[in-house]
Length: 150
Length: 145
Image 1 (cartoon, one colour):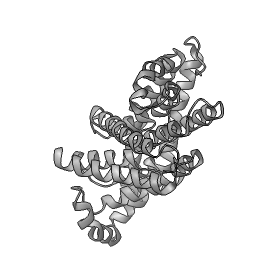
Image 2: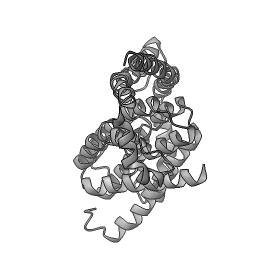
Image 3: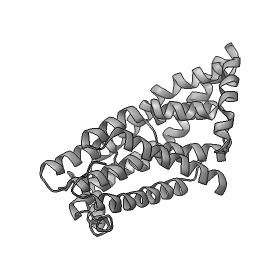
Image 4: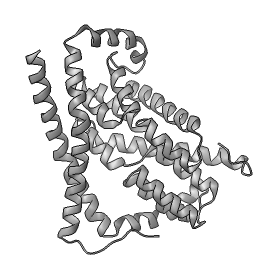
């Protein structure tokens, strides 16, 4: 019993140290990139890309922010964009489908990478699969455009 | 629309450091109790029993039965809880990679489904999509890795 408690204390603290070493620098770099305005620029680059999903170019901003920062922050921006009437219902649904599959990708990837999993493999698979699914969904929703109740 | 941007100052570094420490703290808060519980379970017959029950199902993904615990914690609580279980169990790198991709697509269902619902998607379709992506990616990683 005492042995198990010791094992848990040492093991859990070691794991947290291992993860903190990776996660803290990554969050620091993200904050610097944010202040440099790089996220806005990435969103701009993605404006033509979201056309592939049949979305308006305004969708790029909430999509990119959600992918990089996270779902709850992304949802806030989605609500704001929806209120300003910049997005159609279909755009909204497609962004949300993409984001439930892939959000906060750097944070999540960093945590798993700290355990030894290849970051490139995880990140590439997650983004590629989310993009493929969103593309498929964009075709399905188009057919029933009047009734967007997925 | 644009995020607030500005010059890189000491404030930027402070905010970055804070968000990194925040993530680590959130992780520690959930991970440490889970680590203790799983480690104690390892010393009882309970973990073995759980492993035996789920071994056939987890076998499809090339995972041992006790990995079911990781998937359940990740989906009902959050990724941090799942990580706590991963590090306290002795899993191989391939097994961790399979769990990582499955959990990447599908985790924290109560909280995240509520968000998607608020935007207007149906809870069932969101959960179904995420579970399908998790299952397919888990099967693929098991075969390809």
